[in-house]
Image (cartoon, rainbow, N blue to C red; front, side, top):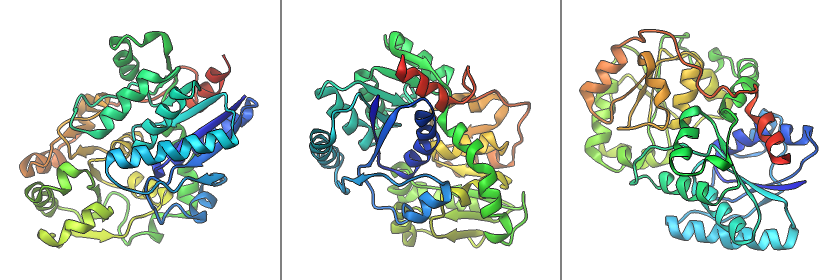
Length: 351
């Protein structure tokens, strides 16, 4: 079996780093392609060396643009690549980016079966481009590889039970794979002068927060009311608008950091404040309470016993949530029925 895997954003490379070895273990040949959806200076050879995985065999260099322009450009370039380098027995896509949807549409129109890793995730917010990408990709996929029971239930409600396989979360696999490597290569003392538990970690990147000045200022004002320093690796979208707001003195802005560095910062934080779905889960797995700077989340399981709280951009809500404490143990978020999600994904493709 020969599969084509399409990725386009750093988190997707991390997920592929967990799945690719599992494919190899069961004899599946894989061609890994980068759509070039975003230029990311952290996606250099150093990134792949850190994770111990090979880089993609090709970069489609689709570039940025409007959602329609970017999705269309990826489709045109991917179709050409598949015609020249194929045939492939399946196309694997991850998550909910424009790359995900483009890969799914090209494969569907070319009659190539699609495996959607992280199928069934729903925010139920149709204003999010990611929600549209997820739902459309699920509709055309043969293997709906659900990370959680909630995701599998969502797919069943949508009439897609027959193709749904609950495999667990590949991000949990990746966290297990790379946490020790992060600790060895990037110990906390090499990143910051703060001790474990003596800082909060924050990320802000969603348009609902960065494109509305009042929301961004409210979030940063809340950071300023916290009793600990707030380390904030800066997303390019946030950097572009930061000059229009007041940044409190306790907010320590850093350049974007590598995946392994982020694992170290997350695992040692007192609290995580973020609008990122991935970071929310990583905080949960490390046992760090998380304040979600959104009105909804794709992972409602994390609400149990107040390990995560949705606050949106409301200053008072953020402060109150950050001062709160979990009231009980965690659930088993993302744990697959057969152990490693990646191994179950690989076996599922062979059935």
